[in-house]
Length: 125
Image (cartoon, rainbow, N blue to C red; front, side):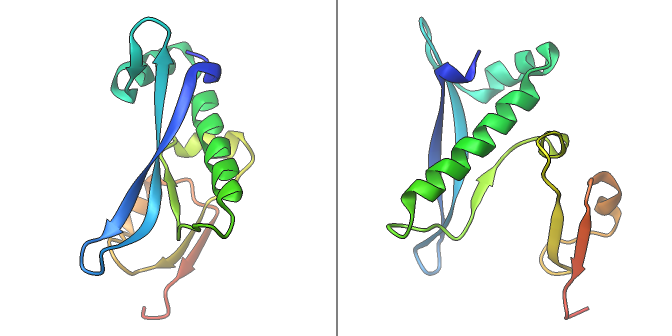
């Protein structure tokens, strides 16, 4: 289940009102030598029990960053979503900040479950 057989695909996320691509969602698939592409619903539980889920998340995050950098100005997405455990981000040395807190689906109660380093409150509050 190593990253040498993993592939990251990008699914566009569009605004249906403006019909414009707003960003990308990074999706990882495992290219099994005999069974073909296997979705995360099958290999993530195994990765969790074997303790390699953090390494997979770090690899997907790194690959997404490399791919976006390679896109350059040809097609810069506004954002790229990568599903990783928040503890994975800490293990690779990243800090987590929430910007414009208080807009959209913000919840003060949910903050206690998030390992946030910085919280920037929206001016509207």
